[in-house]
Image (cartoon, rainbow, N blue to C red):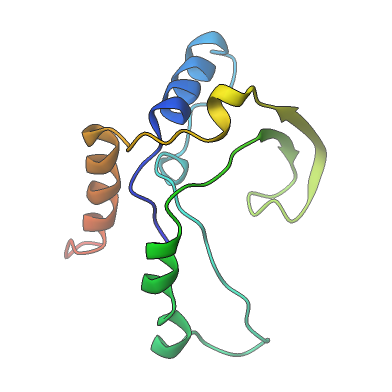
Length: 122
């Protein structure tokens, strides 16, 4: 499920983290657009269109997401199923719930990622 884009407060926070902490690894493309990965199946089952039919209605209900902390993770595997250390960093209230719409650039970033799946070489 994708969102329209990062709110101005979160986009600014991401830029601030990148500029103040150049020692951190650069973001991978998958984290440059906001989304939630949904999945809960029994072993050896596949997702069907019926499983995904709630997606649009759920997406219409989810306008805003409260972000009240960040997690700093030193991981063993990229799926984060195994990690070495996890630290919770609380955020100040200015970042927690930004009612502003994502900028046009943020919305364009999301659309560009989604359109990649339509490319013949995908």
